[in-house]
Length: 301
Image (tube, rainbow, N blue to C red):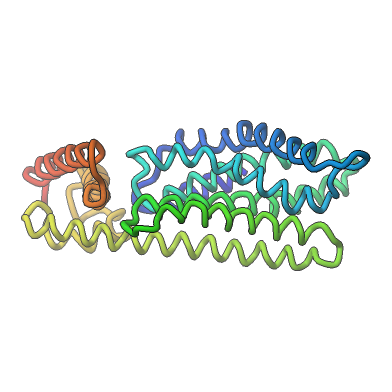
């Protein structure tokens, strides 16, 4: 799960979140979300139990577990998305994915202890749960994170519906996987479903990266028109070329790139914000411009 976590973190190409923040979300999934998910499932089992029987396992697996677990995992994102440093679309995917991976890690550990009674049984669990179940948890919560991010940066009048839609998608993903592995003759469909989910997840990541590239180009073009940034830097700052040496003094390259990208995102957020957040972003924009001006005035090639 930690390997998956690092891969997702590194997929954020333009402005990676602090690794410590990503780990905090991972730990929430591993401990906090697990606790509330177990408590929620127990409550629903008690609520819908008859005099002599608990609800059927298929109901617990396909309805109760997805509902309670996705709420438990996603609740932390509701706080994260309000943070001013949650500043681009990919943040939702990264933080949501981190929570899902943490949850999957602890759930896997419980399964290994409970059902890995022989080496063969343990090996099956490792392959199935590490390669499929935990990935499902990652993608389902990342999907919710994506919709929360879209809602935050959208100016659409019905954006308040997006978090609900995101939760429903997360729950449906979870339910389909649990249903597919509940029967021997449907297991292959579950495997195919996960592969399709992985393709969807990677495609969504790439789509958001393209959106961020467009934001960077749009906002920095305005800065170039104001003579803050050279026009020749626009295509470099928004592409992999920014990682290469030689196009600007190497002593300032990394700081210049980080500041320029930060400036672009802060400007985009400023345009859709109001109140104290607008003032916060305005101050950040001024700081970024001043730093870029200082860097370029003495070090530009």
